Length: 621
Image (cartoon, rainbow, N blue to C red; front, side):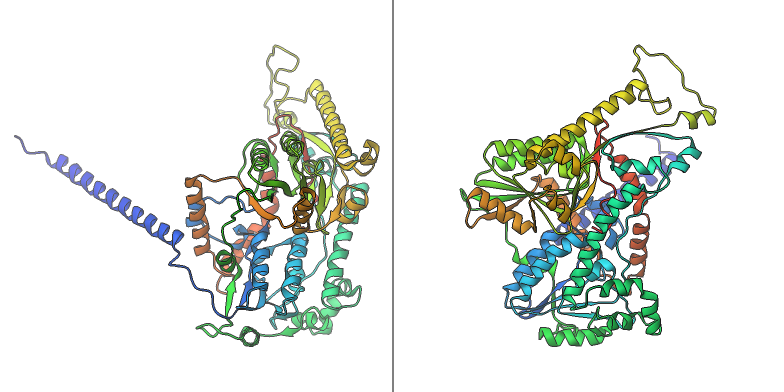
């Protein structure tokens, strides 16, 4: 037998080396997965809760009603920053309520430096829980390096507000500003064909104008003014300030700051917005004295709320056969088909409603809606599921979150009762269709489109051809039909005439107080009050509450836990050592308008090209 050639031996050795490296890497990856699984399911063992501690309410990122699904691999290898982190409102509320009755919890400390957004609507629901905690005789203290306007509303609910001597309280009021593209579209030779029903359906304005119309300015100014008045009134009441003090601070900030020699912290102290100016070590000693305990590093003893609620909240077990209220969350854009958490899918949400209604012991459903709308088709699919549930004899109560406008109001309108928080934005009852065409732009580039079709409508939806007149007429008819249908279903659900609904519709956006005055909602109240109303409609005296979500497969549950664990391991508290993370979060916020625009384009999936969306509603929410 001949000996292999030198070249063959070289390639054979190289191949064997590659094989060994591949096997070694596979084994390392397998061991890494085993280690990750160990931390997911054990976390090194449950850490015992201290005998005496403060509940540390330190949410990082954005507070939401329902977290979006997270890709576990992105959570594992991607850079974690507050802009990508979400905290469920329910976790905050439950932690506060458990702590109120826990003798081991002696105080509640708010540390909000990592909080990017909570909004006034959710803050008012947290305030309700903080009031219950305070009634137990335990103090609430807030401390921070720098309070944004959003953070400060929550911090102002504390008995004592501590600010770093180099910190500030930043307030600017509420505003709603948008980009307008008419001149840009003209320069680009892009034609946007908009068909709308509702005189004030402002979604069309950016494509048709260079500025906000007088009518939209009046409407937006009204609901923004209502929210700002509620904000200032809330702060002034909690801080025992004179009426108008917050507006005086904001509008005269340059003079206020000059009077304090440019010292922003002293300006906030002088204005009565904070109680104490303390460096970190001073506030730590102060809090340790109130809490009555220190940890091994001499910091005041505290239990982060997410760890605390995870230990205190047991499984959501419902006694078999016991009558209970089921709570379903609908948050995000409304899209057709099945959609992941954080987005409302027409098929997935309607299926969840039907399956929940058929569940053992379910006597009523509360639908928590936080949406600015979306697809007309998907909204109707969801509304039909609500009607089918009511036809089975189960009451459906809607609890509106920060906003339930346009399509968000559409899916709520037929409920037995509608609750809105005092800061909810709702209404925007209107319909639109929009189709861009680029035939002029293509012509400028020397590209022409021509061909032949078998009917007058063949190729009529190509964006490189002028909009077909029959298509334009058909879209106009469809928009008008859908708007009339919207008016009728609201009239039926709210026991109003179509003329009464039309008078408050036309795409107008309403604050919660105005919506209640016009009959669009029944009560101003929190989710807890909506649950109580649903129990009352069902004749339940002491109902259990079940929070329902789409069931996950074993694989999905594993991936979810991997994502949550890897995210928790990578995302630490925001501190002076995390400057790169702060800059990354700031960049994400800077790019947010571009991301929102891209998301809007990606969400235009209605089969009939008809949408109910409110883009102007989210500014201060």
